[in-house]
Length: 140
Length: 158
Image 1 (spheres, one colour):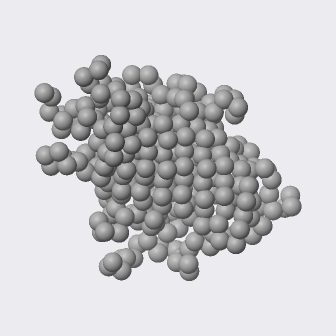
Image 2 (image 1 turned 135 degrees about the horizontal axis):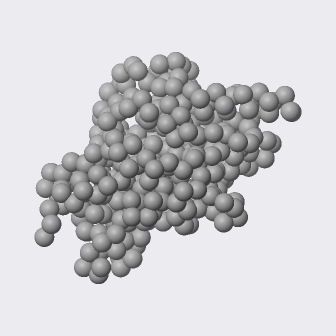
């Protein structure tokens, strides 16, 4: 069995957009945390300043895909079918973290919930619910 | 009305040029009228999400749709108000074609006292063959008196 930490690192290293955002993944056993260090290029509203809502959506989408890879193993990158993003608080110029919970994986579709936070885990800044088209490794 | 649209065109250009993420994506508003806003992100290899196919990352489409929806809200308002995305729902219908620029066309179809409702499509060639479709809700007067640099202050502990 391949090491999930290595395969998720390998996946991210191959994705130019993940490098563009600056996304990292940390694993503690089977518990995965996605980390988005703050960078000026992530700012959407320069006045507050606040991280772009689209960046937070993108970050949570990538978190869900990485979690599917870590937990289920994927022959191909999962494809996003739909996402619903809730914005709870303004994204401040700080490191953002996210964790995903796979609610269900069927033969073709996975349902994943993601929550993102900054300095307080109990005060999430955004949440995402999404469906993803999956290709588990054993069927590849 | 055209005065308002002219003012809005200047405003959205400032919104693009003043937003580091919009600059990083080379986002540009190519048209703005009473019907809404159309924006473009040029194809760029650094934005690829699937290295096997060269398809742009879904996240780029997400950011473009969010940005376009926000500009459509400003177009739909008769005076300037601060706005914040409450909720953004996106259906991804098909991968964008590698090498092609991505466009988003957003239309604000309802404004109430506190909330604006927007629909948008993202496409590469033809708006009737979309890459993705979005539905969003925005809160109006969202700043609540928080002004310049508000996010640089410590948030009160929960």
